[in-house]
Length: 511
Image (cartoon, rainbow, N blue to C red; front, side, top):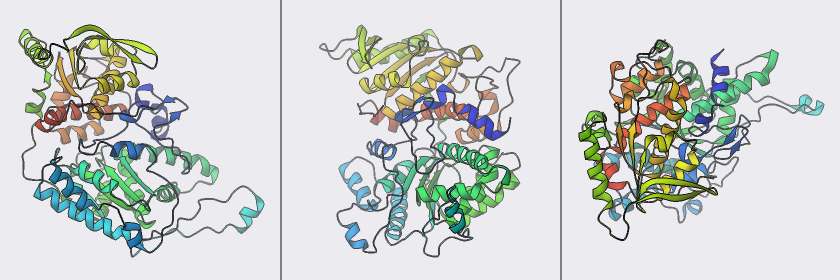
């Protein structure tokens, strides 16, 4: 089975529908967070990192911020009236105490402000229609527009922001995106992995549409993407898949030639992308393109963020020992026994879509589950979203090591972690093994070697193959990505910044 067919099959897996949202090949249809032929997709498990200081950005992005064709007048002063610019927005957040001022972030926000101002004066080129209709007259009078070979002369240069975890890349990009004036309505903010899944689906459909005549599917895909949005914001740009690596240079090149302006965040400098990848030499032209066509900027404040072993100890306790069980019980009691009017009760009933879900032990703000109560039952993303919306803090006890016989439990656990992350829920876990080994079955004869995808993830997380082990539990790249993201999110949930800001109720759109 070729890679495109494999991706199409994988995309139908139930757990993936709750994790990754894709868009239809038709550029005029945008079913993000809508029902799909395979079932309902939930916003909360689709999105990437969202700063707690901008809780409405995610909702806006996933619910209508991406629209199609628009034209705008040259009177930028009139369009700008009453709109809050990125630099002003940032300073307001600092002055209100919502975020802490940082000289490195200030330097980046100034670059984003400059790009914002350039976009105010930028008129993107018109994008030609892809193909004529099937009518005879359309075929007779249709004239194919030449494919542009270089970016428009007045197109602003994109930004490539890289830095370690916790430096505020996503927050700053979201601030920039939310500050774009209303007339820029051809825009898109997307996690890069979800974007590439969309691209592969479009490429597959384009090849089918070309039929026996054949042709280059990248050009029409890039053209349709450019017609959708001429401002693209990519979060967590990383290349760990050889199929992505082989098409990225030409895809990015054609997007830029069609006048697209991009803002990219990444943990890595372009020179370090796809560092351990197969046939990396073929990816070098894409690296050179990023360095020449983007303003590559470091957002490293100089703080040491190599904190994976330390951070997890605050929220993730392993192995399951009497001392760890006692420690987690102390934390639970300290959070639940200070209010006589709100004591812990057993089997509190939570109504979800007309059904009753029993919470084993909880106050009005803190809930405690055994792993089997949470992931051993046929619960969905909607259930987990409702739990995290109602309880600012959740305890999950006795998480086991999961192998091939526990795939459903593993998928539910990943979906639950996603729900906690999107809801800014404070999470405490006791587990049989470390988080990186929860989905590992290295003793199994069916265990597969570490994939190229996972090697890149391990590089980003600073962990070795010995830590992750070999696993046959996941069958596709989307699942591997979901697992790696769950690990990364658990790490972030153990940071001081997360602990200080998490645990407050937020409304989440789960429609």
